[in-house]
Image (cartoon, rainbow over all chains, first blue to last red; front, side):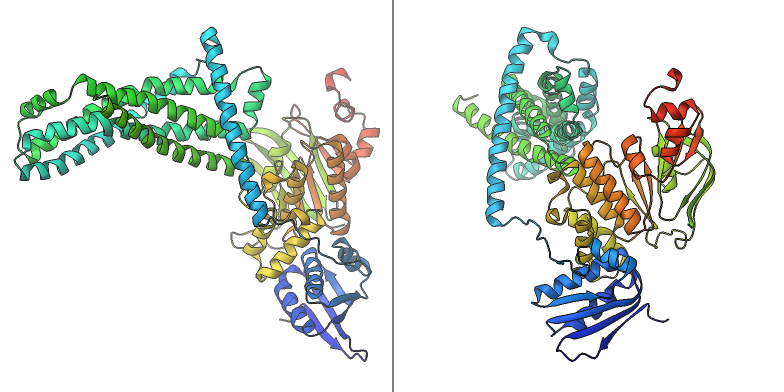
Length: 374
Length: 246
């Protein structure tokens, strides 16, 4: 196949390189055009390229010619286009690279390290400001809600309860059962060595009811509902639905945040209680299967080891967890900026911050309870 | 002028129910062709059908004289600029424009960058090449969308509501850019719009869609239609009032 264009050297007497492009210059042959021009111009400061015999030039090839001239300029040289007429001249002109045009690069603004540090600092201040504004709005919203309970948007409560509670129940049952069973199995192996089989119910019961039940259930709710709240509110923010709410005189706190926090306050303790039950049941299954322990023995040990106070501490944690999940997820969602990427970032941030908060809260509660001897 | 797009006996709609029927028109090479109509008249649905995102209920869309039919392994024969610009939020403006070049050409990275920067220079965004879409204005996003759509030198460019959501000055700038592309890059432009100043300033030919008539109610040069049409619905559209009040 004949080449669509040719690049030939013309004899020159003044030390300049003279090139002649002939034929059809298109983006399809762009790679060859780019390489051939680079190879031909190498080592020359002044290059004159005759375009009089160019039959066709498309936009992509024109951009490449302009790019070649810029490249030559960066090497300390210059390409001068001559002989371009008609559409060829117009196209080169369009890329500011025609005969007589400067063909200079406008350097893109590219942030340096200092700018990055500045941007990070501004973002940190901005995030702090957003959190403070959120807390301020929250306090105002709570006060208004207490004064006028009807101002809280409760129409979505049923759907929210169903999504967070009923829909989340199967995974809570499964995971807590497995956690109870795994804990039971590990405990049974160790206790059996020392003849401590009767204490399996103590180990599983107290661990599940006081620590693992509330924590695992909260983690599951974070993954399901917390992430969903952040993504939902984030999408609403980037779609300007939150701004629309404000212009309609609706407070996003009372319209969106409160119903979600209330939902979690109602749902998480119930799920935690159910999680405690199935987690303990997981321990019972291991006691019966692995230790051949009668169910009644396990249940009697459980009754002696686990008090209502223990269940209460777990439920108290679940209330705090519910508030943390609801508020952090909603705050991250409402602080979303920048389209689909922003929504993804807000959701990730919500889940990470909530998980950290849950562990921190759990540690704090456990420490306080040990001080109070609860 | 040669014909580049021929639409014949086209019916479009959703769920088997026709929104527009028996649509037929030709677009000639190098012209700016506008698809006009009020909200809900089916303009954007027609555009989605033309670019192959929605199958027609009946009829065909023919692209003529602009290369072989599209296949999965051939570069697209037309560029599309969506109403929201649809830039990829996690990529800079330069990366957005580079995307089709990296996919469909064998250009070395520095040459592809030179072409992409050229496209951005063409639309006045060279300085913002390393910005993310979230860091630039709506008009700049639209212009970057045009640069991306132009990356592979398509002979036809489809634009969905290019002026939507832009202020009059930015909108006029965009109109000038569209005219520059059509006149100097010889790109055929098919645009969907209901912005009257934009239509009268840029379009060579147009069709006017009407949801009640379920089809095309007028065709021709916009200025001529505006000044000479005796159809009350056409007059109503160009004079910005309801047809019932004519």
